[in-house]
Amino acid sequence: MKILQVDYRRELSSEDHGQAERMRAAATKIANVPGLLWKIWAFDDEARRAVSYYLFDTEEHARAWGEGPLRESLGSNPGVSDISTSYYEVDRELSAITRGPISEASLR
Image (cartoon, rainbow, N blue to C red; front, side, top):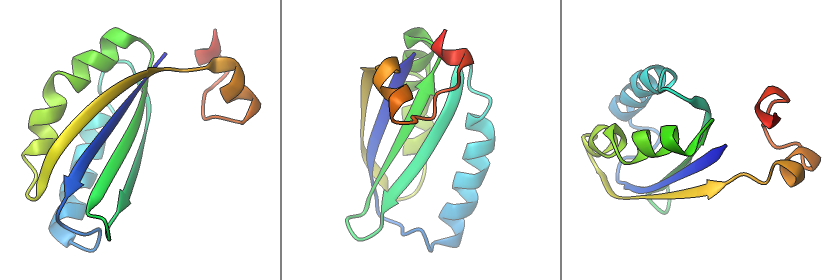
């Protein structure tokens, strides 16, 4: 399993109706990205930053999204800039102990 972390600058706040609609539409599409097990969305309106954590079944799927359509898709949103991506291995044992959102099926 591979975690993809995406950080970016977000000028528009969570209160912006247009941005909320665009993100909902994006979530529907992202849900069908090959190999995606889950995604967590987070933001800090005061700092004008956002971060996302994706869990993929393989590194190949994580990099196909993170180095492929992600940047173009995310970067096409108004006020989004400074996109950075990082990839991490999942420590399955420790994540299970602390109730990380990793299903039993994905631990095999």
